Image 1 (cartoon, one colour):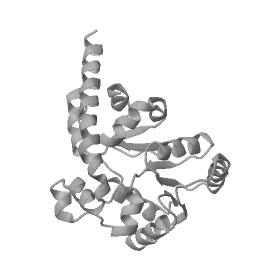
Image 2 (cartoon, rainbow, N blue to C red):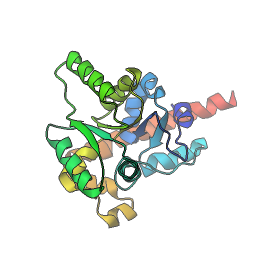
Image 3 (cartoon, rainbow, N blue to C red):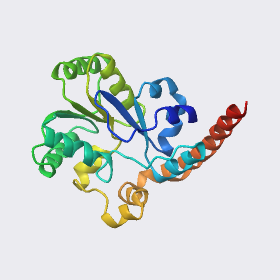
Image 4 (cartoon, one colour):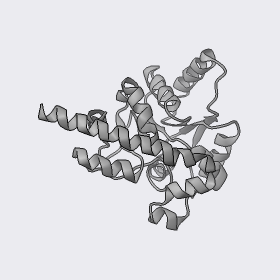
Length: 234
C-alpha cells in the first residue's frame, strides 16, 4: 500500500485528463481492500494532516490536500470559472448537489455548471446510462462525492467509457457546501488544523470514524510501513 501511495503522490501542478482521489485515515482501509481500483488513479492526495505526516516516514513529503474550499476545490473551481471550463457535480442526496451548485455559482463568478445529479442509482442499467450521457455531454471537470469506493468506481468507469477531463472525488464536499455555504469551516479552526473537530460538531455520527476507525488505521499503517521497510531491505 505504501508503494501505491508513493507512486501516485501528487505532482506540484494539476494535470488535465487525469482522475484524482484523496485518501484519509478512514478511506485508507478501503483502499487497502481495493488496490486495483486505486491504481487506476493518476494522482492520490493525502487528505489529512496525520496521513501526510506519516507518509514522511516513507520518504514522501507532500502537504495535506483535500477537495474543499480550504484546499484544492478553491483552485479547481476558480480556475474553471476563469477559463470557462464546465463542471458537473455528482453525489449526495437528491436536492443537495443542486443547492451546492447554486452556492458555488454565487461564490465563483462565471462558473459554468454543466449539470448535477444525486449519487443514488436504482440499478446498474441506470448507472451505465448516466455514464454514457456524461461522456456525450463532455464536461471538462467532473466532481464526484459518493463516499469511497463508490465515487472512485464512478470516476474510473467514466474515464474508461471515453470521457476525457479532470475528475475529482470530493467526499462530503457537496453536502458541506449545501449546508454550510462556500466557506464551511470557520477560519480559525482551519488555521489550527481543527477541521476534524468541526466535522464532529457538525456531524456527530462521525465520532466513530475519528475514534475507532482512525485507531484501526494507525495499526494498519504501521503494518504496511514495516512491510515496506522490510521489502526495501530485501
